[in-house]
Image (cartoon, rainbow, N blue to C red):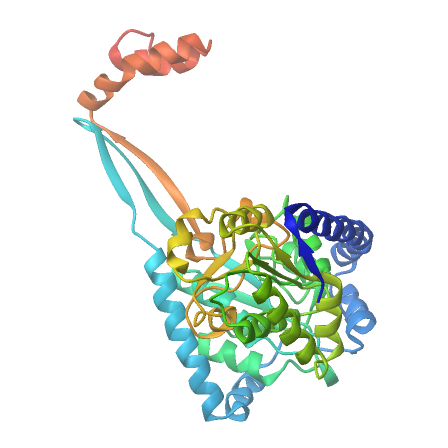
Length: 429
């Protein structure tokens, strides 16, 4: 695993990665634009075409039948069902705590303003597929929406062999109470949810993680449908000092590299001894790791040795990673200094893998530095806020003088008149 010394070397490496990702983004954008045009024009026919092309599967009916959903629950096994139910319970508790009711404020006697929450009507969740099933991602998309009061949740996910959706994903759908699942993945699934086809009704918002093609598709359709944060290839940055366990650090790097060859895996440390120990652990594990993990570490992995932990925090904030682990003597002492990260994991017994599955955190998080502007998926993403004003005659009179003055400063005479007429100072006809 490459070892870099100083912030200059670290930033140069990261800039090269960003340039490479930018080139990949441009190439993929041209492909995605064509897919979206085809889905809008040809509907289900385009979905079947691209499913055959990219997933190698010929599909008939796009929607998973109720019978398939029911059978999936029987096939997963008691331990699997128990694990999904535990994760569901913690996710529900976490996302329910995020929601608060509306509020009202009396800004003057007889004058009240406030907000009331209103859930979205229909949401589409994207669940990645490919080499592995992701029942956890289905739960991450569906549960905060359902907790927020969304009535309809539709899931799209790539089909596997024989056009089937993996039983664990369907079991998660059943446990969450989601009965609408489609065997469609990639950019074509995003286009289908955004614009609708013969089989898939369009949604109000699209959420969920995916590869670069899915991420680009979400960005391209956002003028026509609401989308969540850009959640692409996985990232981990670990801030570690000499007290950190190198086996834990190495294990967590490899865990994120497991998501795909474009995954980012970075250690920031002020300890040369730790850097050396982590490097040895990683190299030892790579001997038996699969090619995807090895490619991610080789292409996007690095240990950066900096002067002190404060400098590590500064570089971590500049990277704004999806996942930030802090393995130092007093990890909680650094939390207030962290400005940009999708989620933060404090201490050696709070690994990302725990947050990915059973702890209740949502693992749909911003990547590619978007944590500087976006938060992780939450119940707030599925709620609109209805603002309201309620004034009595007395409350109106207390507020209208300032409103008339500002309307006239801006040159809006009819705004001013709509206020003055209520005071008897404007013509009623």
